[in-house]
View 1 (cartoon, rainbow, N blue to C red):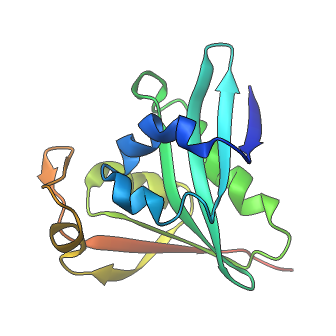
View 2 (cartoon, rainbow, N blue to C red):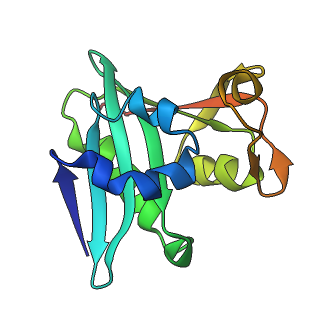
View 3 (cartoon, one colour):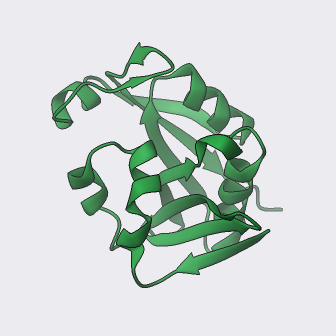
Amino acid sequence: MKIKQIRKGKWLFKDLLMEADEQESMIEKYINIGDMFVVENEKGIVAECIVVKISKGVYELKNIAVKKEFRKMGYGKILVNHAFNLYKDLETMYVGTGDSPCTVEFYKKCGFNEFHRVKGFFTENYDHKIYECGKLLKDMVYFKKNKIVD
């Protein structure tokens, strides 16, 4: 397994990104300003993410997706940890996600804590209803993880 940064041709990875963010116009907002990383194993690309620098020391994980057949095998957590440890100036990382038991638990296991909600984000910003784990997504839940500095 190896992690690679993708600098050119990010749109070639759109299909997997859209599993985590179903609306192409939303991905367009961050794909070209973010750093893209992919996890590759003997079967090819199995996971990817995009991280955007918001301000000095503050980053946001904008998209993270793992191919269905490779979920719950640790690839998502590997990407989160890679991104969190890569940036030398990182003090805080944020991630926004739907209020779904699938994703909420994942981010908690990765050490993130809920700190903010944007009511109606998905119903107001997406052109279709989005369901995850059988639940209609309405609110954006923001999580935060701080780097502990000794």
